Each structure stands twice: as C-alpha cells, then as structure tokens.
Image (cartoon, rainbow, N blue to C red; front, side, top):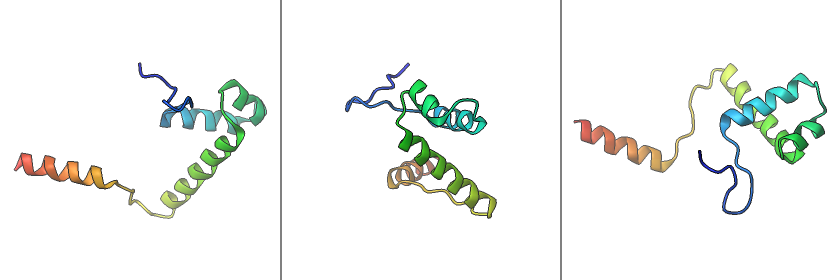
Length: 85
C-alpha cells in the first residue's frame, strides 16, 4: 500500500477518499471542523473539494460529457493505438 504522505510531508487523498469525506460532511452528523480534524484535513481543502464536486456535477447534469485529458495521456493512447495496428 503506498504511503499517503507525499515527499513534501503532506497527506495525499485518493478520489474515493475525497468523495467519502465529502459525503460524510453532507450528512452533517458532526461539524465540518470535527470531520476535518478526524481526517487530518484543513477545512479550506474540504470546501475546495466541495466546490469542485458541485461544479463538475453541475456540468455533467447540464450535458457536458467531455473530460479533460493530459498531453501525456493523449500521447500514450496514440502509442497504444499504433501498437495495436
């Protein structure tokens, strides 16, 4: 299992962990401050995730199905396609 701490000494959360933390926060059983303390997360980061989650959801519901790809991802897909031909 990879370490959740980066070389800079910061925690790194997977997409699944971010969604889980966000959804727990939506349930409001505990305060956001308590949730963030428990998950070793600064509050502004929780609210950044919240904003991103809602923006992407809004775009998806509005019919935007395009997703951002990186240049490296495009290059690797082209190489894979060429190898298959």
